[in-house]
Length: 181
Image 1 (cartoon, one colour):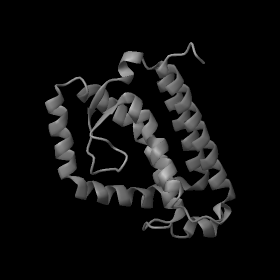
Image 2 (cartoon, one colour):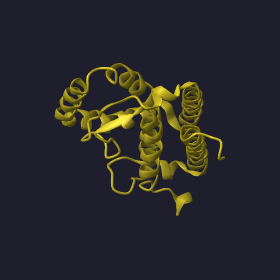
Image 3 (tube, helix red, strand yellow):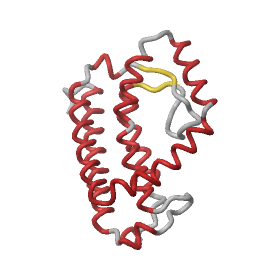
């Protein structure tokens, strides 16, 4: 490994993290009973099924966030700071949408389709990460830190690829599934 650059090692770590979460997601879906899926999570207003959708959505969200970062990350830093400030000011409406999304998303996708969507999203993120130029991984912009505890004031494209796994691991601990206990 000594000949690999730091970014190359980071890419491999991100690939491994995504595969770990993909396998974990399928294990959770495969071992959960219908009663498990309807059970409330620990510390949220969602059911386990809704939380699983929310965990999937953390990965789905990366594609539009990458587009946004590529556009705004090339603007002067002050423009990104203003944009992040506006988004922080809209935290209330964001929280409502963030809560309601999994209520409908879990119903629409259901257990089996969530697994297939997770696989497609992870495959796409693997492909995108492999195609990233080293210089683009360092592109950064300000983020609305009030929207998510894992958003930092300034995030790079490399940070965005790591974000959904942090989000996944955090919410994984809130699931109240029999198979987990």
